[in-house]
Length: 112
View 1 (cartoon, rainbow, N blue to C red):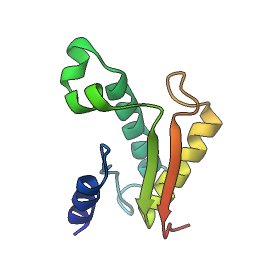
View 2 (view 1 turned 90 degrees about the vertical axis):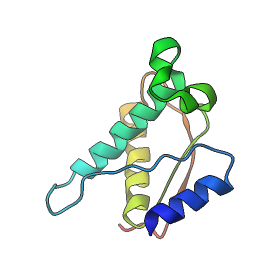
View 3 (view 1 turned 180 degrees about the horizontal axis):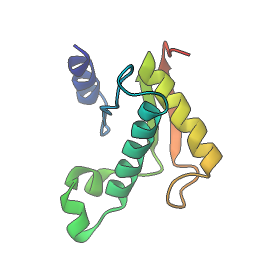
View 4 (view 1 turned 120 degrees about the vertical axis):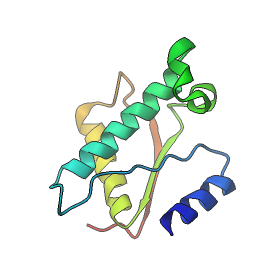
């Protein structure tokens, strides 16, 4: 069901949409899900900056991705993940020299 929602969102917006398959509790304790989400953002940023042979891994993000136009979004637990990634970005001073790459956040009934 959630995949259908994300696919419809991706079809409706002129943007790349990345869905993170983070580790779930109770098998994985906090901060595993937060770490997975932050790691996924690092991969997206690297893909947006890639060129040459590196760009072959994620050619769409390499061609069209813009590290200065990233919006973190999520609903329920995903909203909590987006919120925590934004806080972590601020605390750690960004990723790879980019400290203000997140343009905004969309938190749909985040679970706190």
